[in-house]
Structure formats: C-alpha cells, structure tokens
Amino acid sequence: MKQKFKLTIPPRYTLAILSFVCIILAVVSFKYKDSVAPVKTLVGSVMTPMQKGINQVGSYVHSKTELITSIEKLTKENETLQNELNDVTANNKVLQQEQYELNTLRELYKLDQKYSSYPKVAAEVLERSSNWYSTIKIDKGTKDGLAVDMNVIAGEGLVGIITEVGYNYSTVRLITDDNSNVSGMFLKTGDTCNVNGNLQLVDSGLMNLNVIKKDATVESGYEVVTSKISERFLPNILIGYVETVETGADKVTKTGYIRPAVDFSKLDTVLVITQLKEKLLDTDPNASATPTPDTKNN
Image (cartoon, rainbow, N blue to C red):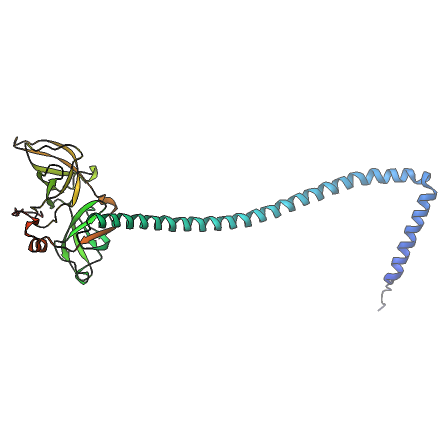
C-alpha cells in the first residue's frame, strides 16, 4: 500500500513567502500604477458594496448588542429600584402603624386625663361578636383586677359595661347593643333621659334617646352624660350628643336620637375603669340619688 505524499511547509517559510509577495505587489503597484489603475477600479467597484454591506451588518450587530446590554442594565436597575420601593413601602406601612398607635395612645391619654379621678386599666380588643356592634372581648380579666359591671371607655366617652370576666379576658356589652339601656343626663340642664341601644340604627350612627320630660329644654348638640341615678354606670361619663328631639307619641315625654361620642367601628384599644359604682356609693353616699332599677343595664 502506497502512502500519499504530503507536503508540509514550515510556518516561518509561509510567512516569508507571503511577505515577499506583498512587497512585490507593492512595488508593482507603485511602479506601474497607471497600468493597474483599471484593476484597482474594478476591485474597488466590487469591494465597495461588499464593504458597505459589511459595515451595515456590523452597525446592526453593534446596535443590537448595545440594545441588549441596555436592556440588561435597565432590568437590573429596575430590580434595584423595585427592591428599594418595596423597602420604602414596608417602612411607610410601619410608620403608618406607629403613627396610628401613637394617635391611639394620645387619645387614651386625653381620655385618662378627662376622667382622672377614676382608676383605669388599658386593654386591647381581641374579638367582636358576630354582630359587630353587640359585644367585644378584651385581653384583661380577673388577673388584672377586672370585675363584672366595670365601665369601659374609649375615644371621647362611654363604650359599654363588662358582663363577663375570665382569668385573662372580659366580655363587654356595647351601649349600641339592643339590650343596653343607660340612664343619662343633659349636662347643660341636668334633665334626665334614657339612652337605648338599637342595632338597626347603627349604620346611621345613632342611638335612641327617650324618657325626656316634656318641659325639658333640649337642643341639638347638647352633651349627654351618664346620670347619678344609674345603678351601674359611673356619673358624668360622656355618652354622646343630641341629634334631634321631638314630642313623643304619648304627648307626655320627648324622644329623639343621640350620636355616640365613640366610633364603634374602630374599637381596638379601650380603658376599663376599675372603680365599681357600688363601691363608689359606699365611699361617697352623695354620688347617687336613689337608684331606679331597669330591666336592662342602667
């Protein structure tokens, strides 16, 4: 079997030959430039469109490369900005929550100062009854010194009264509940009245106001506070403000509506007055006149 002959030229000889050819071509081109001009023109005519096309392709590739690079850069910048925005949003929510808590503490402090003569314990609302405006459960109980019939306040005034107490919780009946009946008094005139809860009126932000003497002078905006004749509610706690009053169907008394001093839709923190009305009567017999019992809370 015959082996094929394979010519191998060392790279240094190849470089030398190419260099020599280039020198010869340069010399010929310079010496016979007039003779090779048509060839140069022909080559130029052929090569110019090719070069132009190559330049266009190069420009297109370059522009697309820059575009891809810009997109990648913008994507990274967008991710960075989005992360920063998420951080700012989270911080903003924290600040809003802290501001809300601060406002709540300020309101509680003002309320505490308003009724500074009564000892109090702050409590958070754990849950609300299925009927939002009937009862609430708070996170304080017998271990905190709470007891049934203790008054509960928030916002600007009366929230309700404790009806059940456990070791670490208590149930509060709101004054908006149908079973709530509070003996009230018009602060300006001293005339008495009853404030009744009515769940059908809750959405309108009102409660019933009745048992008002026919000759009593009552105007819209009058403050209504708990009266001294109430058996369970401590005296002079703001209940709300008179909305309207008119002569009742019996022609003997007046009836109307009152707007509570508390926004019951936003209850989350309350103050419990740890002074019971019965203990107040024991220490101060003049704190109440002869109580008039009701079938409901009074």
